[in-house]
Amino acid sequence: MSNYEIGRRLEYRIRDLFRRNGYFVVRAAQSKPIDLVCLRNGRSVLVECKAGSSFLGRERKRELLDLARQAGAAVVLARRRRRIVELTDLESGRLLKPENLLEL
Image 1 (spheres, rainbow, N blue to C red):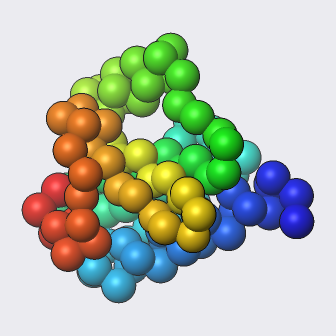
Image 2 (cartoon, rainbow, N blue to C red):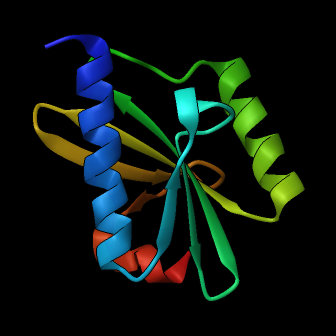
């Protein structure tokens, strides 16, 4: 499976997770400027997905935080490591549980 397919699979998995929690989710074409935009009750969450050995560099993190501030949105990093998905609030650095998505 290619890196693209692995990343896309993760995006779909995270998309479905947010949808199950009542969010309307849009997947951005070519992941620009963000992978997923999730909307619920007037709140916005921007999601960047990273699978496998992909990582979020310092400059990209700064870009995402700036984008989130401009949009008035929360920003979440979704990582998949060994079949386990971690959700991290990028601003605070705290790990999120799927049931906490309603608090964003």
